[in-house]
Image 1 (cartoon, one colour):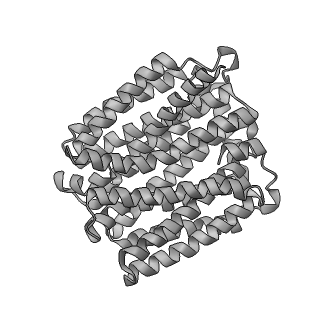
Image 2: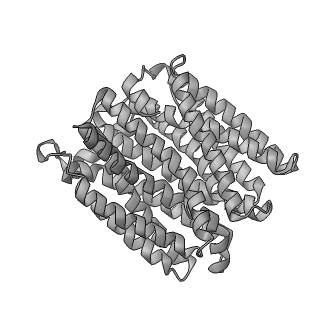
Image 3: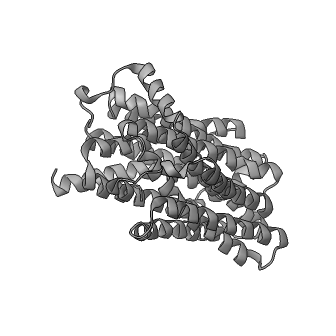
Length: 406
């Protein structure tokens, strides 16, 4: 593959990876406006985020194994088409129930893009080449959540909340054209998986029988729960409780995402001196401590918005260290079923995230419920890591895999 072809592939796959975070986060500044516009409750609006995450979770479980059987292009193009249709229908959603249902369909669509982009890299590269390409894609996945609320805030200066979904439909249309013209089939018929549903179920059963793998997947999912409790609750807390406008919220949200990405990049340096399990345990301890501080500041109001944001950003930084290392340890245990393992890992992460998104809203949309769920996710992840994962069974992580997942 020439340098030009490699660059083209990275750009196409990066765009496919980015549509997931953009679909999740781009409408966040509009959540209060959706609440008013559809005459519903904050909790009901947060459930639309849950719908997207559930679609992502289920989609990865279904589309990952399916792409191993029928190839990459068909599931990808079908998923993007579903995303476009759902986005267009969101523009005309008459009530919150319809919007929530359509968000599930959006999640299924972007799951195809996420799974296929990862699988294509696995089809074409191995070893150090795989690590370099996948690291670039992970950087895109980190940058997209920063840009998404800012893009959403910019759109809301010119249009109402329905315009955000129109923009997502246009993005999906551009991607389906690019994918159809520039992304060839990368899984030849001879390499496709056989055995159908029975083989897939055997793979999943083998993974679920591995206590250490299940524990690490739960750790990753609970850390993700903290992240999505912040994602779903921050727009209400920062705009309604603290009075930030849509643009200021976009900047505050972006600052937190910058901290998370900085932590993931710093993690690469830490790996030169410490093992992934050492970093993971330390990050979970630090995240739990920062979460308890967050609860303290939310309950007492001590220091106002500044201390609340500072403690939130510390939790996000801890998540930035925990989230890469838990998957790296889990994936290193099952290289023979990497695709299925990745699908299960992603499904659990987004599935638990989907449950955490509306949880805080059940007790109100203030800073205290959000802080409790954020801190609870980190504390539960630490408890699972200590009590469930047998540390003696955690072997060394392949260096190329470690780099790729960071």
